[in-house]
Image (cartoon, rainbow, N blue to C red; front, side, top):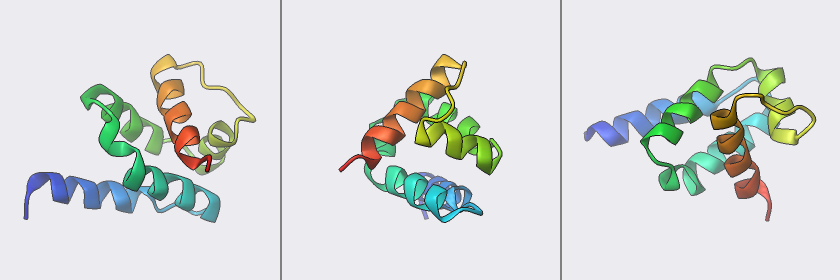
Length: 84
């Protein structure tokens, strides 16, 4: 199995959260938007996954704004992917 396949599987596992809303937003982004990120943005996505569920949900729903510009960019990418 290739390293990038293993990495994507690990990320998919990390996208599984305690809230269904987060599961849907994150796994959908991993499938449809993650590939467009550069290496730095992919590292920022992984940092984002380390946040507690409630904080992450607030960022993704737009009820709270991240002061970290790199994370804010990735959050915006996820939100754009979620909009039909």
